[in-house]
Image 1 (cartoon, rainbow, N blue to C red):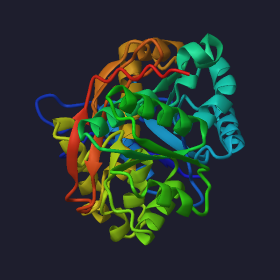
Image 2: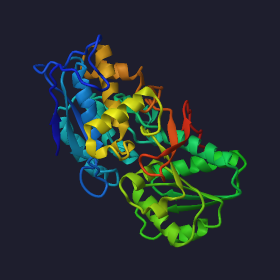
Image 3: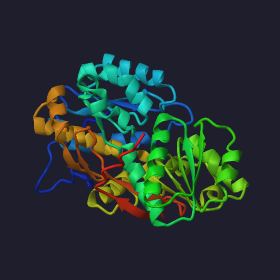
Image 4: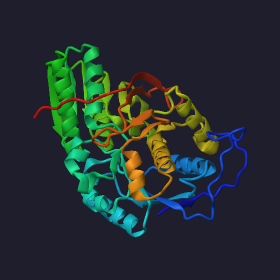
Length: 397
């Protein structure tokens, strides 16, 4: 378990909150801390230490700017896994609740949120997650379980809309689809296929595979004759497909889910295995041209010199934005009371590193995504397209 607390004296720094005519008052170190429980994979192959960088940078900036409603911020990391074992997440959340955290951020798998919603809901603890499936929308969870849970990453059908529309715009003669059998991947696969069909792309070859598959040769050979491929699943599945695609001569353009970002940031494949891949990103701070994204990249690389030539998106800037969303809610409420913050989250309209977060009636805040080409390396990534104002796909049974 990793614990970090920042107490900052009022000094002038160069960053998002530089001193000047509009000085920010540092958080009152004598006030009780506002404690955030960070749910992530802390052990195993999916652990990524740089995920802590974004949250620690946000805490430093927030405390320089007065904390959360005057309270200095600290966080505790809990090993919640990646969702393949929801029981691990339940244990982590139960520990966070017993530790009396003020808020919870993290959790990127639908199974995680489904497992913990009955536990978190009754506590009223403000919770920000980025799990994708509509099955955990507010209307599905209901007020008892979902009133205090909000999604700060794109919903599955939003990503499906972006992917399906873009692939269809390239007018491929045929499309190969590799889709995981987990609930969310299966949903997105259906949504993408529906979008492609609606656009007139009907020559579709699909293979549904387990996210824990150890051999995808049959799927690779089945998809090899298609003009382009689309894959949606977990990183280990994506990495294996790319490896065996090269081995079997599948060389066409491949469009992939956000999990394919891990293939680059965690070096899960060789450059040769990734040369034909483009992937969606919830937030690629390296290629976004807004002042918020540019400031983040500059400050991030200054604070972490070992990262100056590396990818910043792998630090999950969404988590950085999560911290400021909580700050915005508490400052507007003039309180750190759970209900007061949740009331503000329900009407949140905040622009951060990743884009505009605006809460809808299903507690979704993010309606954007980007298509990225990272084959040139972390400092030479290309933005293929920035999608905004997405409404999602009405997926039919």
